[in-house]
Structure formats: C-alpha cells, structure tokens
Image 1: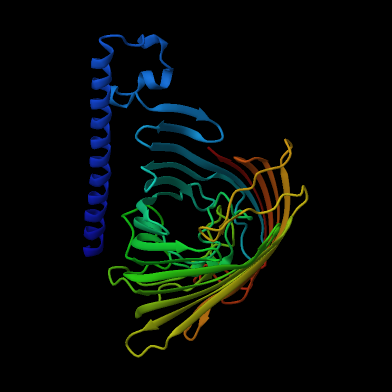
Image 2: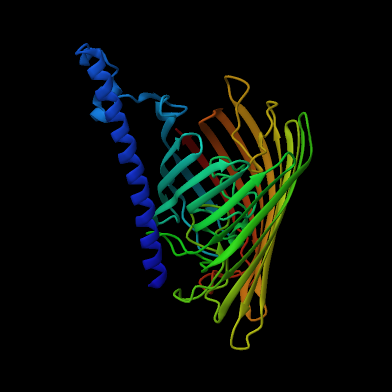
Length: 446
C-alpha cells in the first residue's frame, strides 16, 4: 500500500506540473492574441477564412499551426513560442495458429494485440514531455485485455550533453528491450527478455559522446496499472547501460554494450517470479515459469549486447543473467538466457543506427514497393536453479518482413519450440513439449 500511495502522489505532482505549464502557456498565447487584436484596431481575418483545425481550437490556442498526415499523425506547432505537440499511435493486428505436440491445442487466435495512443510535446527545445496509453491483448481466449500507462515522463536537455529524465520510463537495460516494439525485427522480443527490469518510475541521467552512450537511473515501482501482474516485479533499485561503437564507417557498424541492475524485492507483492510466453502475444501458456520464488530478497541483473551491420546484412545478440538472493537460509538462484539473430534486406536497405541513444531506428524503404527483410533467430531461457524448477526452453524463429511504407509493416513468423520436462507452465502442462507456431501481423503507426 505504501508503494501505491507513493506512486499516486508522484503521478499527481507530475500531472499537476504539466497542467500548470499548459495553463501558463495558454495564458501567454491569450495575452499575445489580445495585444495583436488591439494593434490591428479591429482588422481581423474573417473566421470562415481560417483553416479548419485552428478554427475549432479554443481561443487561446488559435495561434498554433496544425497538420495531419498518415505518416506523422497530428502535429501542432507554435514557432514563436518554440512549442511542438505530436499526437500519434499504433495498432498491431495479429493472427496465430498453433501445431501442438504433447499438450492440447492452444487454440488459433486473431486479435488486436496492441493498440496505443501517444502524445509528445517539446518546449523551448530543452523540455520534452511524453505520455503513452495502451490496450493490449495477451492470450488466445480473447479475455486477456490489459490497460497500461506505459510512459509518463518529462526530460530536460539544457545541460548539454547531459539529459535528465523523470517519471515512468524504461530502465536502461538491454538493446532489444529499449528498441520500440514498432522497430524490433521479430513480432516479439526473445525469450531472455523475461529477465530484464520493467518500465518503472524513476530519475535517470544520460549522455553521449562521439563513440559512446551512457545512462544510469534510480527506479521504484510503476504507476498503478490495470494489467497482468509483472513477472519480475521488484522494488527500489538502480539500472545502468553503457554502449560503444568502435567501428562506424560508411555502411559498416560495430556496436557493443553492457547493462547492470540491482533491485530490492518489493515486500508488498506476493513474491518474485519469472516466466515467458513462447515469443507470441496471442498465447495463454508459458512453458518456462518459476512460479512464486519464496524468500526473494534481492535481484541482480547482468546484460551483454553486441550488433554488427554491413550494408543490408546484420547480426545482433545478447546475454542476460539474473541472480536472486533469498533469506531464511535458502540458496541463491541464477537464471540466464541469450539470443542471436541475423537479418538480410533483400531490397538493399540497412538498419539505421541512432548514435545518441545507442539503438536502431525505423526502416525507410528505398522503393515505392517497400522493403523486404528475411531474418532468423535462436533464443534460449533457463529458469531452473537449485530447488526452483522453472524449466528450459529453446526457440528457432524464421521471420519475413515487408515494410510497405515507413508506417506500415506486414510480418510473418514461424517458431519451432523445444521445452524440457520442467517447462510445464508451473505444473499446468505436460513438460517436454515441442510445438510449432505460425503468426502474422499487420502493423500500422501514425
């Protein structure tokens, strides 16, 4: 309860700050508008001659220029005040078919796996505000709707080259975790993603140089979210990530990095646990699942990452490990996993790299017919340690992406799953299963 009270108070203070900024900015616009009216001595542009969007806005905001495009969503700008507001979003329409081995059919499914609305504003170049609200469906039953406020943060970059961010945002850990779901190569992140820290409330500081990036922060819990309980929910702690690009010449890039994280278990939760779906959103099962880990005290995480890009070809891989310490004389636990994938753009594009954040950006097709990418991935996750028998799973995925437009992508994934005898979804399935999964997605961003 103390955690939730603290997060509620923090959220209210942040929202109040944003509200005050908006009120003050609106008042300034109103004052400027009144001065302009007085100077014009009654000479005003007829209302019906104004563009439609400014005409329907409140009086104090009519100085904002607005535009709407499929590519960039809705944008409001005020050049005099150096203010920009971008409203956008995304939705993923998924379909999946399962070919079971030892267990009952998981059930074919078709649903919107993710629908999200996003707002981002910049003020005077130094301040940025962002909020992201989404509705996701996890599972094939059609009843697993989760509502979450993923991002609610503000950042200040006036201390160049240092940026300070506060609010709810991703902890700096893992290359794939920090890559937006709009830009990851496969429909779901790899199995080891179950070990990374979540999107939480905190204060982080980041900076970058010619060959490196660094980010470190202190984080607590998240805002109260109506969604599925976190698999690895933890309390107060810190996370940090460092990356470097020793080679960046023409179309060739070498990226390397590492992450560290330490958190104290949140005593208000029922207990810590780790689990993972078989890299598909529309599935009710998690073959690897530790169940509740009794006596959880602290969790330490380690992440290593590397990527190589040479023209249309790329390689990327990560190793992640988590140590769980327990009280009451119980032995410590170690869980780990890794993945590696290769991709090839048949149409000649290459993965763009954003040096300032040490991550990859969106694909921009060269042709009006779009870009085509072929990829394959191997991933594994081991959740068995000492007395905890969460099981081990290995996946091989084959993916085909057609980037029809910078904002539209069609995806096809075929996944081969191998689960050991302990990978039984915490005793609810028969272990040793080897299903195959076919899934497709229509992805639209705006």
